Image (cartoon, rainbow, N blue to C red):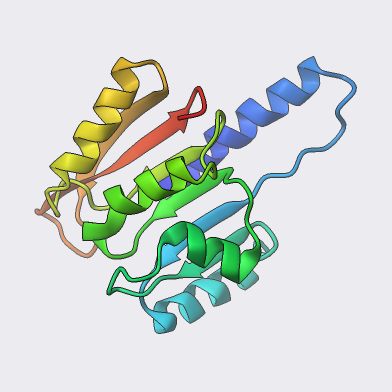
Length: 168
């Protein structure tokens, strides 16, 4: 639900910017999501097909051992040269190193959105601190949307929602 809400916000912002610039009639926007389980990738792809969103959302299968960087996996699997929207939902301990890799590799740019799932439950304080530091430098705007852990009524969790205002 949070992801859908965020995508709605992004779509509205893009639509408004297109309306301001009458020379643009269409825009391209693509969502990438990460996962370590091929079984869950197959489920996600089925959901994307049912929602008729498969052309807009690409799941990236990651190895949980961290031997392959996210930027290498994205370039190998899809030839990605830049990221519009990325949902981190793979090996939680790799979020920060993968983010740093994407920043250094030039895949995250001004206008890129990154959502990192399960940052509270998994105590991803270093990831959140990195985002706070980038925000203090004016590179990103970031916020934590708090919620309960999925499939739980009482375990606290959250998703860090970030937009890059400048190239990192």
